[in-house]
Amino acid sequence: MKKINIESDLMEVLKKGGIALFLRILGFLAGYLFVYYTVLYFGAETQGRISLSFSFLMIASLICILGADVNFVKLFAIENNFDNAKGLFLKAYPFFVGGSLLIGILIFLGSNWISINFFKDPELAPFLKWTAPSIVLYTLMLINASVFRGLRQNTLYAFLFNGGRFIFTMIFFWLLVFFWSKDPITTAIAHTIAVAVLFIISLGYLRKYITPLSKKTKYKVASFLKDSFPMFLSASMIVLLGWADTIILGIYEDSATVGMYSVALKIATVVSFSLQAVDSILAPKLSHAYHGGNYLLFKKLIKFATYINALFSITSVVGIFLFKDFILNIFGSEFIAASTALLILCVGQLFNSVVGPVGSIFQMTGYQKVFQNILVVSFIINLILNLTLVTAYGINGVAFATAFSLIFSKIASAFYIKKLIWKTP
Image (cartoon, rainbow, N blue to C red):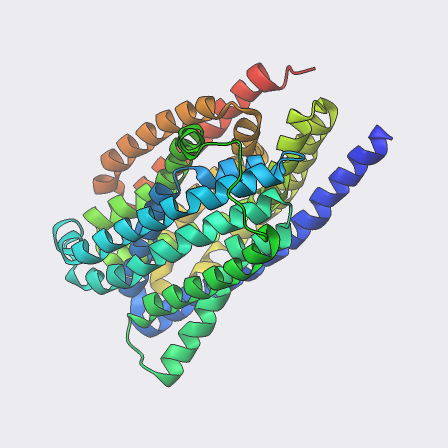
């Protein structure tokens, strides 16, 4: 019976992971088109500005969430814990509304100062102003989506988290360009409208799953946020590892260079597509198996997911290496200058994928503080290398810094998982 259950879990990971991967591919294609038309209509400078504004969105929403999304996944995934998790969710929700509103207002009011003093680019300010409302909407949408992930509504979660954002952005971008104005700021406006639509969709489904509303719970909000903090630090390091290069490049280089680098970075993330798609299904299953004492299933899920990730990522890297110039030339001949950066970033993403879902393993088993410490060290390495290499090597320098720190974090994580978790009988 145990064998049958294990095989059914593995098939669920494969099936639902495939759906999540399909939605992520659709989202990537839409994002790819968004970048392509942004560059086509408005040039690499606008792509650089929209990329920098996205970095503010990701970092700000991360601060607003404080790791609670990952903690909600863990609590909703625990068997017979739905009512407690739901009550906590409803009690904590006003905290995320207030926090995101505060940070969104600060970004909006400070957009001119940030653009002039940090990036020496006054034209960045309108992009930050339009990104400010997205901080509120995106934060709350991610909190809502964490409920669906914990309840294993993986297709819905994958659409909200991966596919829908740029699918809707592309739709609204075309509508604005063809029926309103061919102004560069339409890129940021389209994205904000798209996030608003996703938030409304998430609210509609949330009502379906958590009705009737009840704040009755054994959990305390303060304790929950305290328990979430190590996950926040881990998530912070992941986001900063992903966006520090863009921000630092924006400080030292012009927006056109940032635009070329952002294209290379977006292409390189194809390599780790399967990791993120499978991980959206895997995390709650790992929590359920580990806390339920089913260590055989726990280990088989990890091995199975790692095998799928390795197969997909190696194939992707080979394709990008063979056709890198052709892919970059789609955006314009000047983007071929980012080909070396693209290859370096692909190597980093390859390690990211083939080592496996280390973040979920740590966070779903209670070892999030170990993961946090690894990521803090990785971020320090990343920051030092970025600041050291950017002036001399430009986009290739920041690409190396990003890839090296990512590889370090994955190897260190694998070592500690084998030492601390894998020895579980």
